[in-house]
Amino acid sequence: MPAALRLTLVALLVGTRITAAQETATEQVAAADVIRRMSELERSLALPQLVARLAGRATRGATP
Image (cartoon, rainbow, N blue to C red; front, side, top):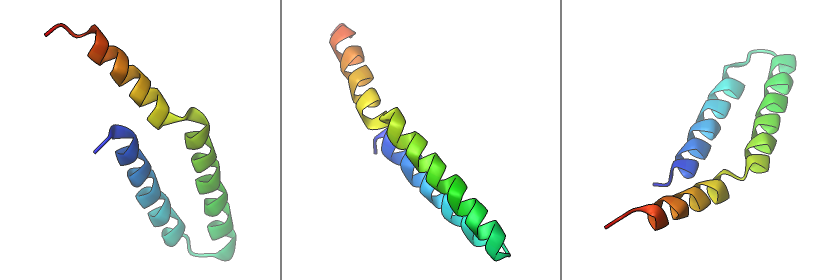
């Protein structure tokens, strides 16, 4: 499983747990905002593309 996919799955699982752990409506709203911001940051980093690009460099630079 690609590292970026693993990272995404972990972030989603942790985010779901954080949201479920909140007790009041205010806490749930605050947690949802944090999760949304984390998702936006992850998308802006374009991790799958970065990993693919770096993996391509490593493969081309490797000697058989």
